[in-house]
Length: 445
Length: 173
Image 1 (cartoon, rainbow over the protein chains, first blue to last red):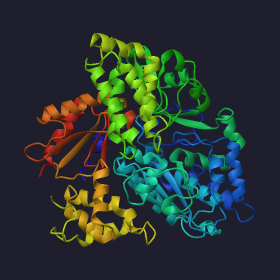
Image 2 (cartoon, rainbow over the protein chains, first blue to last red):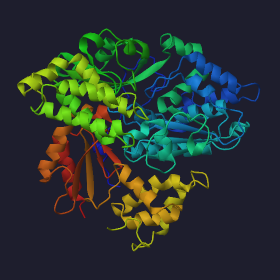
Image 3 (spheres, chains in turn cyan, green):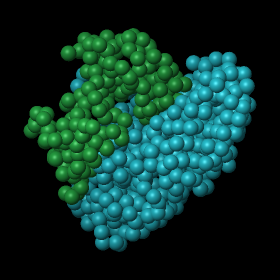
Image 4 (cartoon, each protein chain N blue to C red):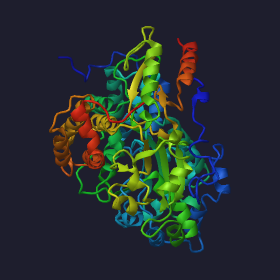
């Protein structure tokens, strides 16, 4: 393959900087130390050795209890308590069970899992082996976003290392625990980040979400009990086992344990990933990222990936970065992608791009989403281009309202929430567009 | 009406090397779930042939023991499969909002202008195809782009885009 390395990111800007706080997942990384020896030198696979120790170790129940005590919540977007999810797995059921890692990181704004998999892949592998032990699972897959193919290849190389070292395969470290883990790549479908669409895709089909219930814990991959967690969730597990659930909880705040990686993107001076304790103030996070680009004023922030409702500067500046604070402010912590917008940004144009995205990525299965997302996009498009009509804002409200909660999966809600957020906080700007056929913001790149 | 579940493939048979790559993917899944390897097999064919033809779909279908239409459903559902031949270098530029805020749209337009094509088009010499695309998952490196599905390029200012085009032109077939 053609050498294009001079055009490729080296991770310095996004991951290997000194602005993480109490880093657990990104600690000590430099780009060249992703391999198994370096991971072991950082304390890697010690958590696995601890639970599998011949003289005692930990029982699966103890592992689940530790994860419950940690307050770890799903890092993919929904924030569901991980220990609770693990306890849903019918561990004793004598059927094949599967563990799946969701690395289909395509929520606009998010690029944290990419850096974990590229620069610290073994932390995910170790987390998955521990999870498999806790739930009595012998086979797992890591579904990796097709667009980061080089990262997929890196992960495959790490898997080979782990197999050669005896961490993967039969009778791991001489124990009764056996676990086979494989990597699977996507090929461009946002919807496959939804867990049941991901399962369909893993089965070699179109990625169209399934009805729930049944939930994956009873009917998952190939119809078998399956647990799916996000990359960053698995990556948090080794630290929790080594240091204990309570210690993890203490680095965050109650009900929001641990550190979280935030992708700071858009109008900031230093875009990148920042691993910080849950509950850190947004103001502090913004400062770490160098503040708003070009010294401009902050206008708005989409705090948890493109699906989360926008928050104006006045609200987000009073928030702390954790599930509860952002939810109280009327949005979602989501995947931890923080899209920052400065005072020159037009909210109509910004929403137009997002609405196009959801319309493009709707899988087409449910009518409210398939038709509704296209409708939203066309409405925002005509408002942006000076063809908005007097009742268009009410129509936007109405279409968004009629998508919410009326589809199989959350993509419909994900398309409607940005519209509702924008109209809630920046309605004047939309009304100005309709009335004056032009933008009230002075400039937009 | 033409059928997409083509009659026996007219394309050259898949090479031993290609079949070995297929086998490595199939081995990841349970013996009765070979279909799980379809996405990987399609991407291998695309890497080797530049696109996925209906003949290739039929070959993969036969190899995995699934209907050709089921393979075609996969090809058409996922954004990155090329259903038609593209240029030697397919350049996908992300224009989603986080990239747009950092000149992603500008990067796309710069590339198109420099190469004299519309977004989605291919240069007359067949060297370049330029397409806008959705989130590549590298938002902090914006503007970002993907070369032939497998190489992610970051911080693509206009100067770096110019340099890239020159580099790729030197390797044009």
